[in-house]
Length: 506
Image (tube, rainbow, N blue to C red; front, side, top):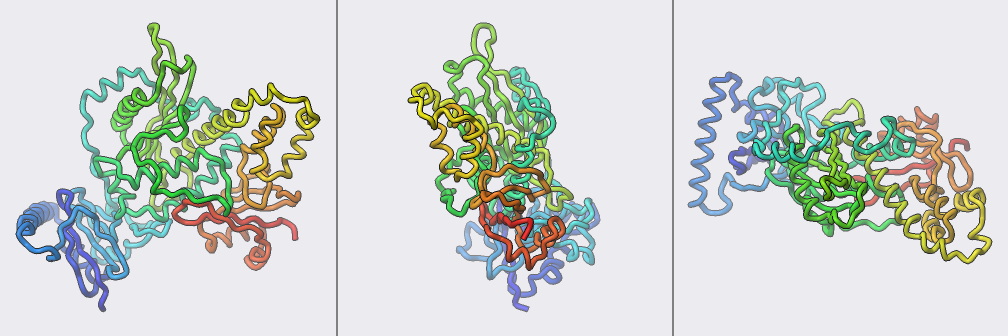
C-alpha cells in the first residue's frame, strides 16, 4: 500500500529524517524500525554506539551535499500531515521511541514485536500514546534533569523560605469553599479540552521538559491557562476572542499587576529544580516589584510553572533589621496536567491553581468594584436608589445581565457589595448569575433568569457525554436535543467547551 511515512533518528538535538514511500503503518515500517533495536543489553550498547557513529558521518557528509537529500537533517521536529501518515523516531539523546512525534516506549526495554503494534494507541484525549495496558517497564522514562549549580542551593537557603502545603501558602482552610470547588470543576473541563492539542511535535510535550529554555508556545499556553484560572468564569458566544499572538511570551510576567505573576520554566519535577526556580523568581521580583512603595504586610502571589508542574509562592513584605524584605512561602512541585491515561481528573496542582485563581479574582474584583468606588460613595447625593436596603438590591440584581452589574457599583457601598457578590459567581449566557445548589462532576444544578430549575453540563466532548447526562439527570438523548436552549463555548480554547443548559422538568 502507498502509505507514506518517516523513520527518524534524533542525536545531539538533530533529527535525521528518512522518507518511506510504502507500508508505513505500524505492522510495516513500525515493526521494521522497532526490530532494529536489540533486546540484549550488550548488543544494545553496541547498536547505540554504531548508530551514533553512523549519524555523525551523515552529518559531516550533509555539509557537502545538496539540499533536499535523504535524510533531511534538521533541528525542527518532523510532523505528520496529509502526505505523511506515520512517523517512527529513535531518540538516542533520551532513549525514547516516538510514534507520530509522541513519546511511547523506552528503547532500552522495547515491547516484543508481537506486542509492539497492540501497544500503539491514543491517550484519554485522543492524542497518540501508548495504550493504557502497556506495561510500565516498556513506557518511556524521562532522563534526569540537568544538574543545578551548587551555589543555587546556598542562595535558596539564604532566602529563609518555607516549603509548606497549598492551603497554608494561600492562607485558606484545607477544605475547598463551594465557589472554589466550582472553579476547580470548570478548570478540569478546561484542561481536558486543552490536552487534546498537547502535541509534542509543536513543543507542547516532553520536548518542552527536555529543553534548556521555555518556548513561546509553552509560555502562551501557560498564560492562557492562568488567565482563565484567575479571571471571571463567563461563558458566552459574544465574548471577543483574544489574539494569542499578541500575548507576552516573556518567561516572567505579571498576570495582575502586584497581585499575581508567573514564571515559566522548562522543568519542575524535583526539589532542586523548585529551589533553582525560586532563586530565579526572586531575581525577577527584585527587578519588577518596588518594595519601597508597598506597606509592610503587603502580599502577592506567584505561580512557577512548567508544562506539567507548578509551585505556588506567597511573598509578603516584612520589616527586617530596619529595612523592608520579603517573607517567602511556597509549595513543593505539584502535578497539574493529568497523565496520559488518568483514572481521575483530579490533580493537586490544578486544585492549587484553581484556589489561587479564585483568591486572585476575588482580590482584583474587590479592588475594582469596592475600593476604587470609595470616593463615589462618599459623594452620594442621597437619592432613593442610593439608600435601598440590600434585600431590595439583591432582588433587582438577580434579574440583571452581568454587563449591567458593574455600573451599579458606583451608586453606593450597598450596591457595590451586592454586585460584588453576584460578580463572584460564574455566569452563562441566557442565564442569570447562578447560585449553585449542588455540584456533580462537571454538571451543576442552577436557577435560570426565569426562576426555572436547570442543569448545566460542561463538556469538551458533546457526543460521548450524552450517556453521562442521561444517567445523571434521567434525560434521554432525544429529549436532550429538544431541551437544549443554550450551547456556548469558551473562546481561546484549542477545542470547544460546550455549555448545555436544559430544564429539569418539561
